[in-house]
Image 1 (cartoon, helix red, strand yellow):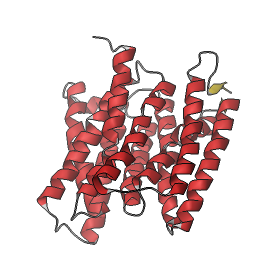
Image 2: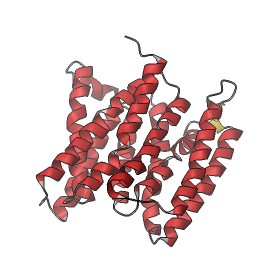
Image 3: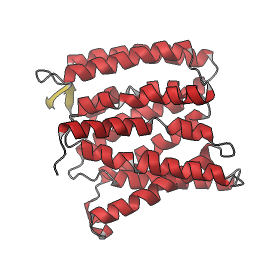
Image 4: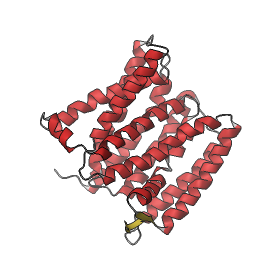
Length: 296
């Protein structure tokens, strides 16, 4: 049965809700550091998504390899970097700071599309980018005052990566949405494994290993295929707006469970950034307006 706009929108919304539990799962562990957690989370996603790829291609994984383009591989490496940056950043700052910074992703995508695909940025996109820059400035100033200035560099990888990732996917001639996820799961797991073996090793509790594996399966391997499938029926601007459920709910879960409270600068700067992205998204949903014009 063909995917309708309504069912596609519900899938995007549900994906955002599942993504929002990412920091809660990490906070729930007690004996895992960031790299140990990445090991089990990454391999959990890899082992869960690989059978899906196999099933979709009727057991002929070789056919997938022949369709893989450099853009898919680079996108997978970018996604790996974002996964690592998210977990490492959680050890240095609060959830709200990271997720609100993440809202700049759509604007980052507009910039990368202008650079890589020669798609001109509209006046609306430039205004939203200026608004987001103001929000980033407020959040950065608050982070510097709180003594986590260097950690901001790690957090900034995420919105930049989101923009680059989406642009790479759009630039590919063929659609292979699961291939970057397979690469990212294996890459994040292997990165965590190498660092952990060289450092603290794996003297960890089985409970925490289970949590990390479930995070990979439930929060990466499960929602991403549905989210990618939903893109066939939901316009990108609307999907961006629906995914704000992650930004809204993510800080709420850790506040309810661990009383993790963001700083005032995070809330003010994040609100400015969120308003800029929501405004741009709503404007782009108007059929008479577009975020970017044609290539040239």
